[in-house]
Every structure is written in C-alpha cells, then in structure tokens.
Amino acid sequence: MTVQELPGAGASHRSTPPPAWRPRTDAAPLLPDAEPYRVLGTEAADRLDPALMLRCYAELVRGRRYNAQATALTKQGRLAVYPSTVGQEACEIAAAMVLEEQDWLFPSYRDTLAAVARGLDPVQALTLLRGDWHTGYDPREHRIAPLSTPLATQLPHAVGLAHAARLRGDDVVALAMVGDGGTSEGDFHEALNFAAVWQAPVVFLVQNNGFAISVPLAKQTAAPTLAHKGVGYGIPGRLVDGNDIAAMHEVLAEAVRRARAGGGPTLIEAVTYRMEAHTNADDATRYRGDAEVEAWKAHDPIDLLERELTARGILDEAGITAARDEAEAMAASLRDGMNADPVVDPMDLFAHVYAEQTDRLREQAGMLRAELEAEDQA
Image (cartoon, rainbow, N blue to C red; front, side, top):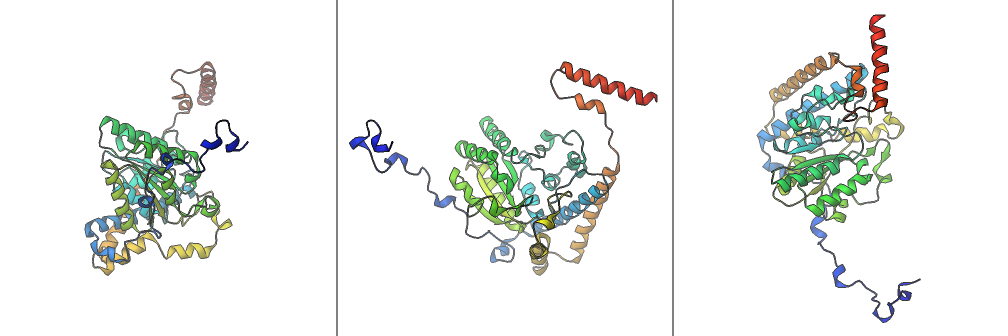
C-alpha cells in the first residue's frame, strides 16, 4: 500500500513535509573544521603561555615514563594487563588539566594516565589492573569515576551526573573519555542524545587512535570524521590534533567553559595514534606495519612540544633534565608501591554481592572458609 492509497490520503496528500518538519538547528555551526586544529608549529603558537607549556611538558615526560613503567610491571607479573597510552599522552594530560577540582572525570580502561595527571596516586590508578576486586580509589574523593572496562558505559553515567549536578545548582562539568571503538556502541548514541536534549554540562573526548584493538576506523564508520557524529544530535563537533597538547588544552578548556556557562555538550575528536599494542596481550604486528608506526613517531607529542619550546627559548637542557629526573622519581615510587604484595582476604569474594547474602552464597562461603581453615591446620 502506498501513501496515496492510505485511507483519507487522496487530495490531502502532500508530496513534501509541512513546515513543522524543517530542521530545528542550523547544522553549519555544529560542523568540525576540515582539518584537525593545531597550534604547535603554526602562528597560533605565538600566544602560548610559557608557564602552562612548561607544566604540560613536565606532565608529558612523566606520563611517558609512567607508561613505560606500567608496561614493565606486566612483564614482571605485577600487573595482569596494561593498556598503554604511549603516543596519546597529550590527550590524557590535557583532559585532566582543564578540569576544576569540583568537576568529574569519566575515564575508560585506557585512561589511567588521565587519572594520574588529575592527582590520583599511580599505584591506586593501577590497582584494578593488577587484579584486585575494587577500583583502588574513592571516586567521590578524587572526582574520578571508576575505570570503565566495558566500552562506552561511562558515557551515560557522565551525562546523568552532569545533568543531576545542574538540577541541583552545582557548578560541575563532566568530561567523558572514550576510544574510537567506543563510538560504535549504543551507549555512545544514548549519551550524546540525552546530553543534547538536556543540554547537560558534559564534554565528550574521543581519542581516535586508529584502531579498536585490530579493527581500523574505516571498518567501523563511513562518517567523514567522528567529530561529524555530533551534528546528528545537535552537538558541535571539534576535530583536533591529539598529539598537539597546546591545541588539545585550548579546545578542551573552551568546551569546559562552554559547558559550565550553560552552552551544553561538545564532542571532540582527538586524532592520535596508539604507538604500542592494544595491551600487553596483543600482537599489533598482525594488523599494522612498522612503517605506519614509524611515521607516527615523527609526530610524537613530547617531541612536538619540546621542539617548539626550545626554539622559543622557553625550555633548555636544565628544564629537560629536571622533567626527566622528576619522572624517574615517580617511576621509582610506582615500582616500590607495586612490589609490595597486597593483603587479600579470599572471603571478600562474597562481600558486596548482595545487600543480604543469599542461601547459596552463604553455603559457598562456608565451603571456602572450611577449605582455608583446613589449609591453616595442615
């Protein structure tokens, strides 16, 4: 049955939608730039804040050392798994730096560095990844949501918290981090849709590092960029060079200010690259070549900033050495903390499962308690 054949259609059928179907929003202001926004190596670098950039440099060096130390801990059996952010440090650090104390960070499983840059103790940031049963830190104390291993599930949580804070009159912005693979999840759609409808004070940062494990972006989406996805929800999209920490800081800070002022959400795509494997359990050589990795090494976030600052006389050898020494001190502290065996109680397996233990859980707990007592007496 065609539209014309529907009851009552006849002469009243209109071949075009009525005026009420016109777009509610002009799409043009929502569209991202054609090329990723950059600052380093451009005329925009003339307005760099030297103090801010020196702090960024120290954090980048510290972040790279943190990644290297965490990877080493997996080889020593101190960590069960570690998803490295080597090459993505500018995204991680800028995300933490633009937030105020009362704001919330919603990280994914790969964003332990962002949590550390926000002030979380590195050992606490890695507690979950060593196989402990809890997050390792108090989310309320640090304003950092638990590291999210399920893809994109933290995004609706960020929207809900931000919307609730606005209803209460609290000055809070939520910054939610996700990878390119997470944009293919339903939670991504739900979060952006609700954020736009509610005009929630939330910033979505997509780290497009090229791969969802082994799946390249071209096999995930046909969109011009991931930043373009915001248009469908009425959210402005920004495309930025994710290895340019000056550009990352500027774009993220602007989005946070906009959200805080009541301007609603922003979707930011940071174009970056995962230099190392998906995790220590992954063999990245099976799906990408060395030439591709080497090409991205020439766009390393630390090198980009170091060249800019030294050329402008903002950073010298003494500053470089000081940043490296500070990073080594952090790595030594992290090693000491992770080399201390955690005190674990097997009976914790049955704690915090239900408000009141079920008969089956009590039975299982009794069996385990008996086995442990038998071992102690042996």
